[in-house]
Image 1: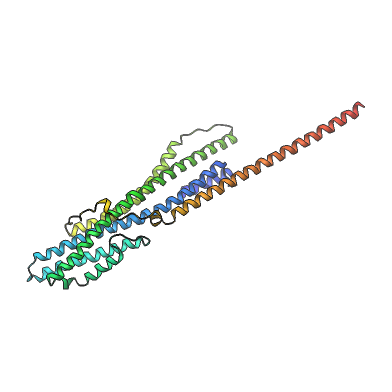
Image 2: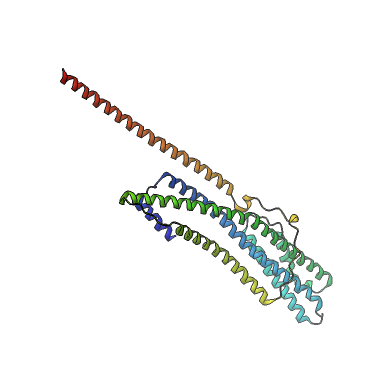
Length: 332
């Protein structure tokens, strides 16, 4: 931000707060609109990544809960301490999984999850309250196992669904808008460098030449570092959570993957990104208005020049007529 402020101050001092050219004005407008769209997609990407991390955690915790619950069958009914310990471990993992699923819902309040929806999480929470009763009889035990295992399988499907949405839509759109924005920024930078060179020549009468490739590379590296930092922070949190799980228990096998063709349909762009299409249309209208204003200003300037030229011709014609009259009087 400090570098951007210094850049703006420099440009203001060179051109007195004005744009160096119409092209610079247009390119900056286009770049600002691209950045607005990119920020919109960035926010969606961040929310979905955070929700995905919580879903991965929930899936692992549900797997541990199912594993601990199944181990109850191997413990003698006389060993009440171990039986209650396994039931408590099952409960703790179920509660943690439920909290992670609720957290994922909290990040994406406008999205209806096709698996592990809010009512399913409520059902799981109710089941957890009866866990020490469910361990007492085979019928209740099996009913609870079925509930836990069903939620576990559906959390695996939800994790797959999130991967599909992120990989086929959000990450793809983010990569495209990032490249488009980067290309526009480079185009704007080159135009400004060209204008600065021209201004220096106007003042000093000398051509200046310097390598702009290093500037482009530095800007790209700064942008890349910012993106990497965001992703690293998300992965760091994910890795930290995974390490906590590994430190306490051996992770169970992941649920059987759902065939891609059987997964729920991905949400619409409006559901994922909000009013992104309206934003795109708004930008198109803004650019059309901007181009129209530029054309009118150019026409006004041209008309002013024509009027000045016409006035100059009229003045010259009057002077010539006056000179002829004087010559005629002198010759007479």
